[in-house]
Every structure is written in structure tokens, then in C-alpha cells.
Image (cartoon, rainbow, N blue to C red; front, side, top):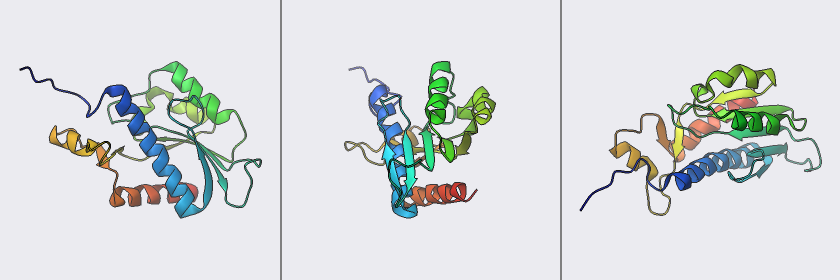
Amino acid sequence: MVMMMYRYPVEREKYSKIIGDLRVRNIAEILKNDFGFMVNINTVETNRLDLVAWFKGTTFAEKPYLAAEIINWKYDYELTDINRKDSMIRNLTQYEYKRRWLITSFRRNIGSFISEFETYDIEIKEIGFQTQPTHSNDINFYEFFKARNEANDKRPWNEETRKILRQKIESWLNE
């Protein structure tokens, strides 16, 4: 019997969707529950903004306060797809928002495009780690990578990680 070694705890496409959705939902939940925003999120498969947030008490017809594209990539992954970069810029500049955020695990994920995003007044926000679900369909993604000694740039989604992310969001909102 041949034992296959997998790079991901599930099939790669499914992994990417789970990881992408996780960070978007985590940030949306913190903005809504901790800071009182009304939040609209789009699924990873759509080519629309990941997240749009309004101050509570305003209507969805009013100009949103915040628009965000959100990346949950590992340290050594870098944006190289020009079409993806252009799509992110188009999404973030399509309407008038008070704040435009590109939230990424690491600044290096944006690579050579950092100045281009900044040209459009897109604030690049670095979290400093990739977030992994602790359980998804009975699979602990974080433990999968930890067992392979590949968890240095990753954190499990738990109360401690939520606290770190909340503190970062709070400091960004106060800038």
C-alpha cells in the first residue's frame, strides 16, 4: 500500500475556500459584535468586495464607512496574478468609501504591488499570521500543519487569536 503525502488537510480548492471564508467571517463578526457595525460579506467565489461595513444606525443606502478585500495567505505566498490585483483595486475603488482596506496576513503577500495599492489610497493592514480553523469537518487544520512543522506563520482560530485580531482592528479604526 502506497501512502500519499498531502500538502493540505483537504483538497486544495476546498482548503482555499475554507481559509478565505474563515478570515472574512472572523473580521465581519468582530466589526459587528465588538464595534457595532452593520456588515455585508460576499463569498470567496464572487469577484466582489469581501466586506463592506456601515455604522450602526445608518442605512445600506448610505455611503459605507469601510470596504475591505481580505487575504488569508501563508507567509511564502505572494500575489503575482495581475488580473487578481486589478480586480481588488477595481473593487475597492468602484464606490466612494471613507476607508479602503486590503487586509493581508503579511505585507510580503502583496509583494511588488504595495505602492500601486497605496496610489489608490488603499490602506494595507497586516495581521502577521495566517488563521487556520481548529475544526472543519472533524479536521483540525492547525494541528495538521503543526504536526508537519509548518505552523510557524499560522495561528488556530480560538479566543486568543480572536483577541489579537480584535486589538488590531481597533487600532486600525483609531488611525
